[in-house]
Image (tube, rainbow, N blue to C red; front, top):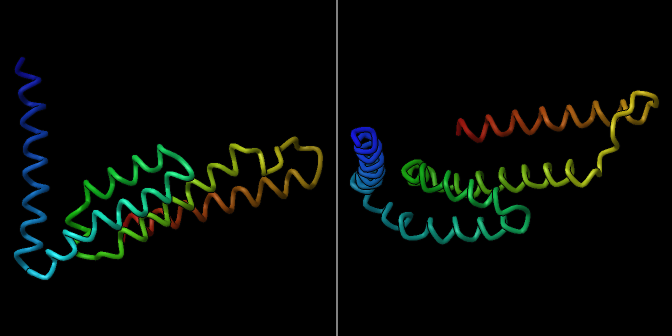
Length: 135
């Protein structure tokens, strides 16, 4: 019983801190109330575009945007940057799972080159994801 109370307190405290972050951002600059009203619309539009690729990516995008809503108020372009990052990731995963990239069998040069290109692309996506995460 006590553990469930601690979990509930943690959830309520997290929600309270989320609302406080939004209130502080609006108190610093009252014009940000416009972002509070427009950001959910932009988030929904980007999520609809992401849904064309994967429902899991859409759920992840919604959760990131809701969890980091106070950061969106600091820089409204994050909604678009995060959305583009999720779309690029969903396309990359779709390419890999649809076997568009030739499989590695180790006997021919084409499979070795495709493996090197795949490694480079995955590494580049990782660097871009880290850059988006830090922005």
